[in-house]
Amino acid sequence: MKVIANHVGRVVILKPIDEITPSGGIAPDDMRSLIVERYGFTYVTSGSTPLEQIQKDGFKFQMGKVQSSNRMFVIEELSIFNDGIVVAGKTTDAAEAFIADLTQWAKDSHGFRIDETFWKKKLFLSEMTVQFDRQISEVIASFHQISKVVGDLYGGTYGLSSPFNVSTLVLDYDRASVPPLAGTISAFKIDRRIAEPFADNRFFCTAALRTKSSGRTRTYNPPVNSRIGQLLRYFAGLCFKLLRCAFAQKTNGLSSCFYLPRRALSCFQLRRAVGKNLAKIFSSFAALRVVRNGRR
Image (cartoon, rainbow, N blue to C red; front, top):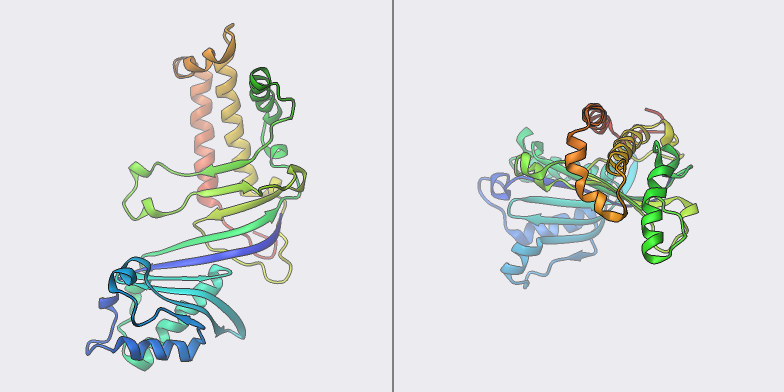
């Protein structure tokens, strides 16, 4: 897999601002000027902006930069809200480097009350375009059988003969079963790039994970050997078993799909497969992480 472009790496720190500001207070205009001077932001929310708009959209600083560990990072946006801050760069590495510099400087030079609790609630979002070395369908067990079942149904209904392929993959968890904070975490999602041929294998990817830039090479292991590849194979194997069970009866048309729950629950082999595959899916998802320099 090759990273074509890193679009954004966003880090959210959830911490009430009034818990970290100096005990004696600080003038907002003074702090704004100091931040602009240090990081060179070219746009700042105007002081005449209505308070209601600032509370909704945040107080914004845009297009600045920070020096960290002999590297220069461009910071696209810093947004300050009553209950935390949001920092966006090309990667989460850039955003985290900026937050580390900002908080250390604010603490040492201006008396901000920054401690270990500041980092306790932290969220990530990474967006990038990648190009896979192989079709995703090649690493999904029994994909061609699944594609044929769905393709035949669409072909019979609309007269289409174009083969089906993977277009979007979304992995998420039960939002009703997690704490409120976890419910704000974005799903893992890949979308085929719009208006680009399927053969190009280019996808727009979104994940609530660190970007973990790979440095100069920007080259990764093929997905067939990755945790993502394993997860896709297990997921597809489960889906095909469900479809096969649904269409096993001698019924015609889409009506057989409506009997899927009853048939699935009455199929001992399927029940065992579901448990086995789901266990592997969650195990793979828990271990999923972006590799550095093409290695685990």
